[in-house]
Length: 155
Image (tube, rainbow, N blue to C red; front, side, top):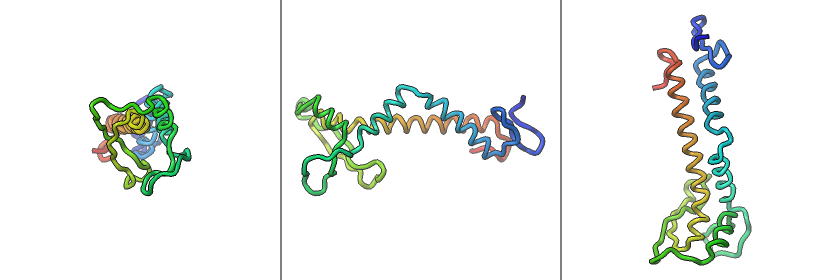
């Protein structure tokens, strides 16, 4: 059957008829999300990285102005790498703060490998999920614009 029904200016997609333009966009978005997030190892790893990077484990008393708790990723990486530093006293940037509050994010330079790895793990998880969202959005727009007519198209 054709993807567009001529009666009533509606669309046919994925076995559903009489869809408005908004409903068509939503149906394509749902389909592309399922295709992208189909239980891949990268997406599972991204979620694990994000959850392991949550600062929800109580730690020692720290100086004022620092983040109060620590994360599982930080504890594990410091346990593995101990106090090993980068060669030649190289310092690399890390992000600290909470992703839910972008104003709290700060960049700190660190020389300790364990600290760097512990702070980088959740960032990598967020980057993988951001890549997924951008791919889902792109593929949804391409398919939607291929099906939609005239003024229903986006861009």
